[in-house]
Length: 433
Image 1 (tube, one colour):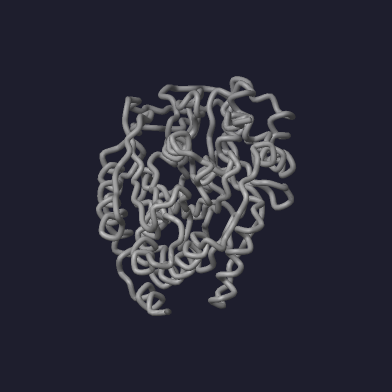
Image 2 (image 1 turned 90 degrees about the vertical axis):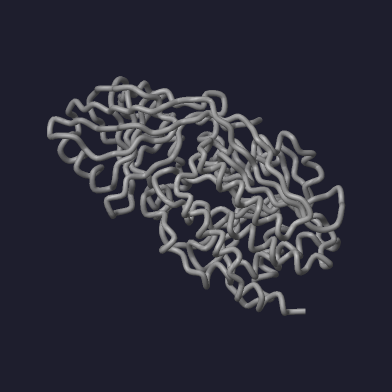
């Protein structure tokens, strides 16, 4: 039976939902817009699933006010990083370049304003997350943190600070464009500058969207995404496309329900962008031993070729390659760990899981986390092609003939150490072992 392939390649369901999400605009965690997006996603899933519901949880609310970097040469354009505390901080500007751990070890930044780039050099052996650089600055006694985009285009980057235990950051933090960062480094390095942030900090709630489809089995396949997005843009790539893909896959699987041997549980999380709060909440409530695998969409459709992080689970890597081979469609599969999206709140306990993104040919987030994360960057052709592959993969993962063993927490911890990821997670307060 191949009719479902043609139906999926001509379907408007997922793409129309993507347009609905980006038109909400402000889907910041804990905001009315995030709630609206969750409700319309539940309604969309309800058209194809046996049951759907919202599960609400508390979250630290944060609404941006004004921000500025004052220099002897005038103010530099910037935006506050979410969950930055309000306040003013003045100190000597120190350009730390990439902001590698060794840069902080070799430079006295106490009481100073630290400027770092969002990328790492080609020769460096791992990605350094924004929060890792921020907390190296905090630990070193910096007065404020300035995060410069490495992607040209006058686009200041956003992205949260804070830890699970302390959701608000400790020092003011802002993002500046590549061009502004270069100008600050050239003209103001060594001079006194002032970083100012105002924000409304308040109690808030977020919610996870749930829906189920298929046989009533104890074991479940989780197909997931996150609904929330940063408030500065449409959040089309990050992660409207992921949630729209969940809806499209639900539509396709509803037509193939007889092919499912295992229940499929769709979860579109809230509050991912502020520390994986929704997925952490869900993982704590769930019997994780009953999760066969997690298929998490975060970054799909940004490029034509799907990219799978298989987290060391060989059976997951083989399944992704197998689907790609059947359809003659290339994919990228890496066995490495990727602790930066909602799958991680399960994988860290040893639950098999994918992070599904796509190849873009560039480093870092590209247009993501900037004003330029807009619908026009995506192509309906790529979305539909990927929906076919991901639907086929979901059916394979839900088949009784597919097996993948859970790992132990000790195995995951050892792999993080081996891949040199443990140090950064300990700095950011994300080390769970």
